Image (cartoon, rainbow, N blue to C red; front, top):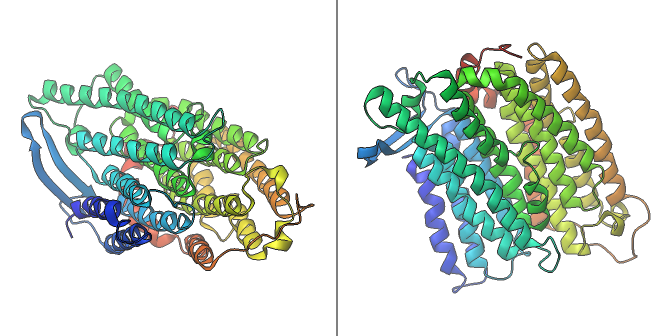
Length: 497
């Protein structure tokens, strides 16, 4: 199966889903489901593939595009990319299912944007030509902007969907343009040092740049990826985007788009600039620890359940920065597991937020309470995914946080020890949300519909995947190990920490 099919399939699905509403109201939904199911099946075999002796990649595809400028349509797959594309497809299926009743207007255009966004994400994980990478990076922006703008909530609020969509656009576009400057500068330096233009990742790995130049270029990439992660203090777009986005948009935003920032940090921000990254590591890890504590502290003060989950994501992504810049293979493996576990657990929490909004028509904690007695299946799901998010043993989140802390402590004991206190705060805010939503006196006596079969099936799948990841993480760690070992070798553990 050629790699470009993993990008082309969602694009074709989008082109079919857009006009499909003319045939039947549910046709766009079924087109999206079929497309993402096919993408899942196409990606699964790559998890069991092995690289050849001549190349670190599981598969490659190269085609000339603009040879005069050294730009090609170059794609490559390794174990880390395969896992993240599989996560993309699985959460895409969840996004379609959770939006089945929520999206009733322009359903064809909605599903077209959803699939185009996922096509851009697949391109980000596969592209090895940095100009193609940038195009795919920007291709994620417009569909998500439209999902928030056209189908978001709070149109009449001062900080409604227009404000949230524009803030998302400005933050990601501005940081993306900074990355574009860094990419063009790298292409120019390659031409200066070798006599030919190239934007190919493997060519750039062999470059020996002046130290000052490498530092500035590394910062250009770091800022772009830190905004998308998002890292403290460039995170403020995320709570607004989540609070106004439709449920499917929040699932994709938290479960998939944030992971592109982490992937970019590891693949490009560290691998291309190992020495500047090692020197910058104390700052990056300090930002990670600040994000862990700041996100957790603000989560406890929220009155809107979606903003609460958004701030918990800021806290969890702080662990990504801490582990990535610790530079040990154990910490990087923890980062990989966290990307998968966070995508599943936080995606499920946003599905539960959307289900609650459909029933109560509010996201305010003050208008909730007593749900456990009225909707026991909903209560069971919320308790499980809340405690999974805080790192309950037996779930993937626990394995991820344990590996990150165990891999980071030998090289950065103080940042790791301070960051570990975020786990205590996580337990507090998780219990707070369970208390506010499920227990206490209800705001009214109206009955609350329990989870529907479609919702139960989606959440049960996420539950089983999280438990499987927590009990049997080794096959996935083995799949990503070659890519992570390369990064660990490039960023010497302990340098400048």
